[in-house]
Length: 324
Image (cartoon, rainbow, N blue to C red; front, top):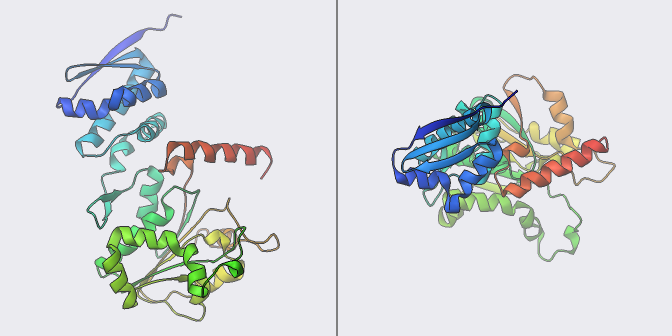
């Protein structure tokens, strides 16, 4: 049976939008063509899309939604194009624009922080609606960064009185005992990603003032023992490296008017072989408990370099093939 090609058209508002859509040296247009199988050309402010009916319609939907993001001053790149095509194929085309409609926070330099994937949007929504949220997923999915953004917003809106950020200081191939300095100096490298995110949202000067007043506390998980953490936004990062005992201790620390976000990657556990991950253990126990949400992020939610997505998928294929 002969396959008929069709031509579909879209009008853009101005040449600036067209330039933004097509990208430098038409790299964005080439990416859309590669991902959809259709051909795209521009005629002034008219975009013509050629190809098989199915391919052309897919490309038209993607172009239309990407133009919607451009009108909202969102930058388009190849990773966003690939994700847009994936959403459109799954029947979630409307989410392409919806994802970035909600401004989560604003950095110290005035940059707007928004969800960049459907998984991130669901994660942020879960934090807003639940007391305890678990975010499980690989590196680069924004688990910690978005939790920190929500914590700073809650503090600025006076929903909580303080922010508490913690991580287990688990050794991953290096020994704390051989590092120079006192205990705080030794554990600071483990907490550096948390400091970096706070500097971005608050600036160094405000962060220092809030830390001095005890409004912001960044500390190893061991420092949480014996405390009741009320009126606080608490983030436990790298939770896959908590033992079962540590996780139970942590989850029984928070008090009235507190919100807790626990993040981790269960494929990157650095505990000794004889120790079981408290994160894997607790999500099996707490599944379905009211006011607790467990959010799973995947390679689709990675917002670092697009190669990171490919690396994660390659590892997943390898581990699935080996029955892990």
